[in-house]
Length: 330
Ligand code: CUA
Image (cartoon, rainbow, N blue to C red; front, side, top):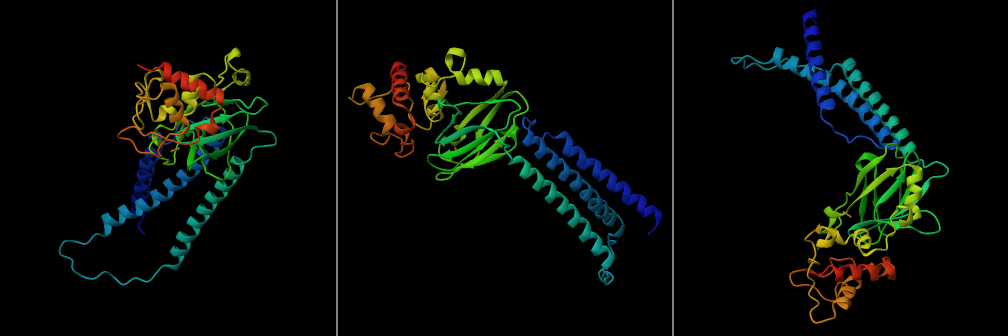
């Protein structure tokens, strides 16, 4: 091979490498990490990306060189020369990718194992998914529950996920991992938040009409703020017994328009001006929550709304929710 050819192939390779590197670096492919697990995932991502860019540069350089040097002239109708394989070349282009793929597999396996390791004493929070809301139950005797997730920064948390109806999937993009919540089994997710702030919780499994509204938020705070949150409303925390809080944590706003709560979803009937159809309003509202198929508003389908609220809401919460809806009538 002539020296000039090697120089040209090298130049093509460097240009292709620079182009691919710019695509990798300039586009924000990943959200900014907020957990140790996401940091490890980012390392795996960049480790793999660097390898891919190197392979791309070599392949692109050879292709560009071949296209420019070996293309047929317009009047050339002859057959190409018969070529046998090149054993040395084939060994090289099999061995090098095999080594690279093995390296990626080893790095990924180490990251997976570390990301699954909750350590000896994690903060344990039970997550319940239900069409179309998340509920979080915190450790301690009080069995404190909330529709939002609050986590102490720099402490490892082990979430146990379960679902009351269909498959949902828990995902906080800034935390990097996700896990399905599957009816009948318990799944887990380990998170060590390392950045304070508020991040979205997204359901990433198509779970019904309200799926796109099945969102919540996670707040990562100091240990002291976490404890005051758990201690309840007297100290600035979030007890979930006001009607408005139940409306939010039970996910009503995912499907229903209700002005006092500031929601405008159109999956189910509007709750702004409920027509009890001759029944006392309060009775009708209560019946519609615990037995949604008892009466179906015109233009809506039965069996869309979950039928589990009688068991998932306490009597106190149900009373508060009914009052909240009755008082919000226009
Ligand atoms: Cu729950 Cu999608």
